[in-house]
Amino acid sequence: MKLVEASGDARTIGRITGEALRDEIREYAELAKVHERHDDWDGHWPATRAAMEKHIPLVLEEIEGTAEGADLPLETILKLNVPGYKRELDPPQECTNIAFSEGPDGPIWGKNNDGGEPGKQAPPVARLIRRNDGIPQLNWTFCGLLATIDGFNAEGVAVGHSSVGSQFRQSKHHMPIRLWAYEGLFRCRTGEDFVRHMCAIPTFGKGYSSLMVDADGLLCSLESPCPLTQIRWPEPGETYMNCSNFYQLDPISEADWRTPEGKQNAIARAQMLDERFKGGKSGRDLEAMKRVLRHHGDPSICRHGGDDQSWTEYSMIGLCAERKALFLHDHPCRGGEYTEVQL
Image (cartoon, rainbow, N blue to C red; front, side):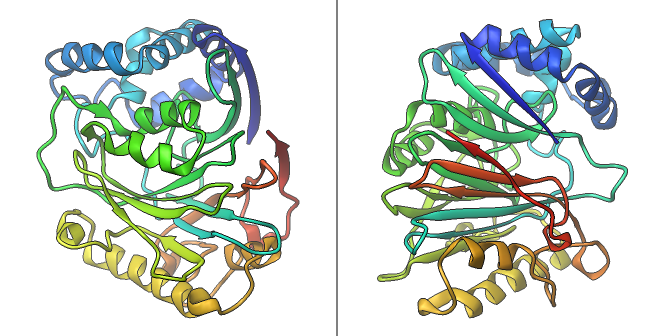
């Protein structure tokens, strides 16, 4: 996985990213069949562009810069970042997020990003971004896609997503949820600010369950069957939470469109983590996080296909109090060294 660093105004950041990832962006565009999969793009895009110009104009500028740097038509990068409907252009993902609000190493977030069969996975990238008017952030995404709701900023706000889905009607006038979360990490100095940001306007996209923790130990899950977002808080006194590929709040728990097998696996992962950590069980430090991200069993957190239904692509950890992020482009069980980035 490449680590791309970019500083300056939004367009400059886009150009640096596009130039650094030119080949990988073309690979992802081909893999996603971006020119074949948008229904009524011309009918949707003008309204979405107007919403983005109002709410996230700098993100739109970065997209334009990315197209310039990659020497690709602007429409290609737009279609990667702004799906035409709620299930489009998302690679298969079965991700697991875990967070601790306190412990010897302070608040910690960890996630394994799981996807499809090796050889058919989208090329990932870690981007360290210092935008002139925003809080520096490190995010993990696919090449050409500005954001997937996995990020960590220099104020110690960490957030990661698990794909779920949404049965609700969405609007071309709403905000793309991944780009709205990306902008939020530039703006929000606390987890409370980020929660308010994510709940401020309706969104569109696949629908996600996300887990967030900040440097002060504020911990919650944002359950977002677009266009809605609801907040799930930890139980009183609890210092651990997880989220996987299902909604845990009623009545939206039935709002996804996952297969019964996929939902059963997601529930099993959450239950296994509860048994391991809930009620003060097990450790709450960096080594405990690395151990659980390496976990094999029934179900596994480090996943290798087969009964696990998905393959772990890369692993991420945020040490919120230290403003330090770690990532590994491999199965964590293989014992590779995490790359460390200090924000």
